[in-house]
View 1 (cartoon, rainbow, N blue to C red):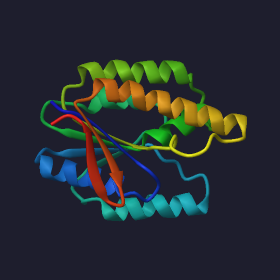
View 2: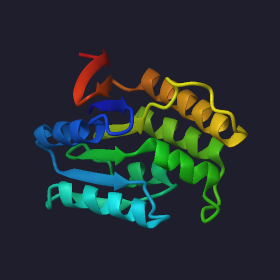
View 3: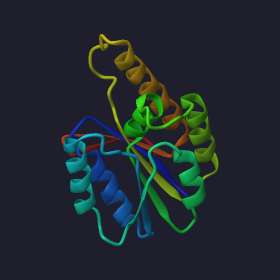
Length: 173
């Protein structure tokens, strides 16, 4: 069993890197997609991601109940690829279509990661390297994502930061 957090900025190559790691893993891959198509541009992004994934991968769309999905889908013989945590965070914090308690969702995810049975690769946007946002909601998002990344990084086996398509190992072998 191995767990990895893959961080990077927008268009950094983090998803492509995570997908390549999942593919060379040799285990069947279950892709857990957290995105929701709130507008046409996002629907196009989701479709591009669908087309880029290997056809044999199982895809599960789960916008909020991530811990439950990981619990139900993780086995010693497979690899879960979760893309992406910041979209999941957005759904939990701000999407009015979902009624969820962020603190509970986060605690459940961290608890599941301690006892997960298969390999798990978590992809997330690193958003805390810029200036402090002006708006309250933006600041909360940056704060919560940073705290989430710190908590996950403390638990997982590997942390990789991707810039310009180049992975940099931050933690692990």
